[in-house]
Amino acid sequence: MTIITKPNTNSEQIAIIQARVADFGLQTTVVRRSQNTVLCLIGDAKRLPDGVFSDLDFVEAVKFVSKPYKLVSREFQQEDTVVKVKGVPIGGKAIQIIAGPCSVETPEQMQASAEAVVAAGALFLRGGAFKPRTSPYTFQGHGEKGLEYLIEAASEYDLPVVTELMDVRDIDKFLKYGVDVIQIGTRNMQNFQLLKEVGRLDVPVILKRGMSATIKEWIMSAEYIAACGNTNIILAERGIRTFESAYRNVLDVSAIPFLKRETHLPVIVDPSHAGGQSWIVPALSHAAIAAGADGLLIESHPNPAQAWSDGEQALTPQELKTLMDELRIVARARGRDLGQSNVVQANAHRLKDLTKQQYAA
Ligand code: PEP
Ligand code: MN
Image (cartoon, rainbow, N blue to C red; front, side, top):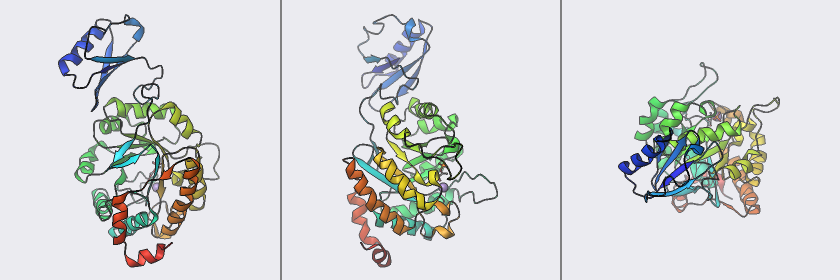
């Protein structure tokens, strides 16, 4: 059960609701949102008599949500959530492409990556500064320096940035550099402490699916973030582990329509970590958009052969541009289009002449 208050309900009024619930041996989790406060009941709602809050005029509604995930479920909220990042919507009609390298390597590599993103017409730059690597003997990311290179390259074109947070102790750095979207990677999908902390921030979060997580576990992780007050959550399917070993992971296309039905959150797809090889990325991207994804998170690199991580799955700048052109057609078949931004387009003239020639249509 969820108890939704009217806007501007104060803490004394919240305490009245909590006390009333406590009379029946129950507790609540209090979720303060910009528009109102929601109290999610902990315990058996059947213990509460009908109309138990009817005399409280600051209670807007009482909703029974049968699903274990409350705030992020479609049952709780019918309208799609649209997450606005620097004015660019994720979710809704437009499809957003986020592209950039696996790891932030050098200022020059990031500059070239940002140029490739703008030249292709994508609106977000990705790049990992803190890298979760399988081996401790491979490049772990530049850490704070990486955030600096990423932000510097992106600011040239006003591109919003997406980068992975692995440790609660780094949150201050992410805030200091003004990271636009925090990515929680597959390996941390159930790092509940991390989820709770990003839930307290006013920064949108991309929550990747754990590589062996069920959809229910994944949505429950999104609920952790929402239950701490941050409902600007984007779910990212990035492939799961199965018996199949021919490619890096198996892209669960079924997850896309399933999540869109089950939750009101935007759903994006990472075809790069699913496929693991660059040649397969376009096919998986087409499939994702055809299945209703709200965006893609794609790895691209100015020189994939020289990449410090995941080079085999990175698209070249030209491949990224070609893919974007194909995606426009697939998007149209779904009655959608790729996102456009006047800000980024206005910055395209800053592309170096060389880059302009290279990507000339
Ligand atoms: C990444 O996006 O760079 C990454 C490490 O992804 P994942 O968490 O899906 O493996
Ligand atoms: Mn990667």
